[in-house]
Image (cartoon, rainbow, N blue to C red; front, side, top):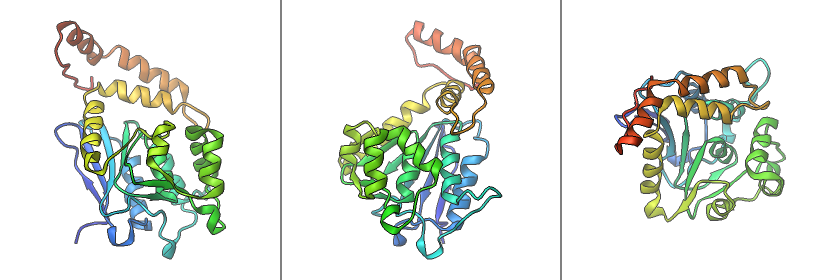
Length: 254
């Protein structure tokens, strides 16, 4: 029997894949699925890794938290598993690409919007219906949506609780792309290949820079050190030399 989250090893192109695999339950997240995903985003990346892809099987990307076993708390400060997972994705040191073949509802939508890139089928919808259930998204999760969507669209997503189609979200630059379902995998593969072709130290430093805000409590000294290390790396010299020689660079993460 396959696990409910399939964790694939980093492939030769530097791409790691995490696949939600509970299609009969619309990939609603159980505590065990949360544990697997949180571990996958809090452990140190494989040295060969450049990008993580988060996708799903079935017709729905993720219907959110399984209400049949809805979990509260999880750590001493009371952060929910959803809040822990969203924070871990946002803080992950390498790019994360969400590929939505179907709707991302409730916590599923929040998870997607915490990824660095979202590529979605044009008929997919994203939203959080917590308000319609008498619930409220965790403060850090709601603030992250506000930062990405700005007030008007964040209010529509969270206060109305309706799902918004991927085409509209892409037109408003809230997700990377909304494409015909037949082009979804090709588009996602092209994006991840472009990301994976970049220097790993640069990817890490830029991701750290983007995360260096009060919400994630990042240490700016560490961010500056990561930037400096990337600038002085062998990969930086290789990148400049390859551009001069009009060839593809060979990055080694050093």
